Image 1 (cartoon, rainbow, N blue to C red):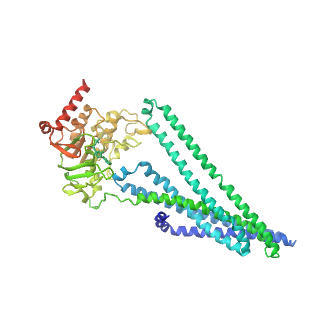
Image 2 (cartoon, helix red, strand yellow; image 1 turned 30 degrees about the vertical axis):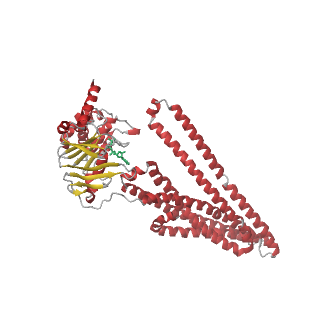
Image 3 (tube, rainbow, N blue to C red; image 1 turned 180 degrees about the horizontal axis):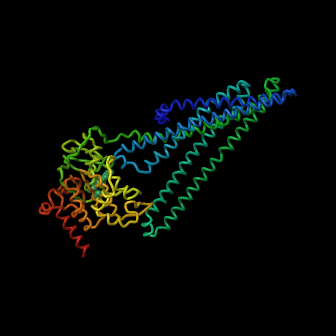
Length: 587
Ligand SMILES: Nc1ncnc2c1ncn2[C@@H]1O[C@H](COP(=O)(O)OP(=O)(O)OP(=O)(O)O)[C@@H](O)[C@H]1O
């Protein structure tokens, strides 16, 4: 329950609206408890007989009062929803924004530790459970408290003894409803889990349809799907059964309370020689029925609050996360073009793997440095350190002679064009996918877009599409080949005219001939830029100013292509092996 106190700041933010809501709640309940008194008057009047002349006036007065109270109650009820429920929606909106902002501020390691589904669930499902507490939870708790207090006062006013008799079954109802609600919540979670299992399976079978068909696995998938759906049905039926207990339980217990009211009310009426009138008994029956919902809602709301508390705890867990990378300097930073790694080491906290070991190198303005190494040798980790996705465990990364931790990292990142290893394109037009690379204060016209697409040797493919730059990619549109996607991804980095270019093995899906064309085209573009090319293919990096060979996170060789060949070490071996493979491919 403590976790929900996190939301107090939001209650404080909307305190006036909430206060108004509480006034409406009090108003509606006050009018509500006065309605049975009109019925009581009417019944008593029936018993004592009418004055023939006044009966119409009397009926008109009581009927009118009843209608007026009902209308008043209705208006207050409408207004209470307009205030309290709206506050809950506003807090839901604020909370979602706060979580999303927090997600944006968190770094690489956080995203590696947590899976996408979990991130999505906390901002969607957990927030919706918390919203139920903020809206109906809060509204019914306040409403129940006032309704209970008013009703009890009126009942005690009529008869203390009768009140005690009739209230006996109601706490039992609260307890049963609490139990039933808890079971319903647990079963709902089980139904939801099965539902997301089915969604994941369906989604995977669609996105992996080519593999599925190639392996002839349709039958196996269908059997698994049937099994999952059967389980879903079973879980849902269990939920329906439990839900079915709700109304009968309430009706049964209210029935008992009503019988007790009539019985003891009758007895008291006789014993006390009409101290309790028939009208009192009728009003009492009304009050007992009025208390049904407060008592039932205590059980329902308690279980709702428990569920919200668990969800808020999950949300707080993420909100408490502190970003590992903090931008302590907001002074504008203008990158001159010099990079240096000084005895840099990095160990992944999650796996304890030391990906970079005591690495030193520098890239001067306008230079192209290439890093080559086998899979897992630490190449991508070097880029992540340079982009400050994480900070070194030891050593310093310097940008223009300053520790990267002390410069305005946002400004530095804006001046870099990173082409990552894994291409990610949005389900959007080619134009918007390339323009995504532009900084907020940049713009590019079609000529400029075409220019970069020509540089990356993909325009000749795009111009043949009917919609050209407006061609939509992904699920809703055209699927590009792996190599075309990589080239689009490079164009996205080029369009921002970066001072630092970083290519992370981004030509692995194109053949060496196309690679040659692209590298030649790029030569002019990156001539004055500081450039870092990471690859496991010698052909991509042979023209670099300097080449660094990495093995298990350490630098084992450094020099130009010719120098490294002359050494006759690891680079020489890689070169010969790849040359041989190429010749075999061509023969
Ligand atoms: N998020 C991570 N958590 C834990 N260990 C990681 C993580 N990312 C990489 N590693 C480990 O760090 C080492 C270096 O990985 P890195 O991705 O830098 O290599 P790479 O040379 O870029 O490999 P590749 O050529 O396959 O992309 C590997 O042993 C890898 O298993």
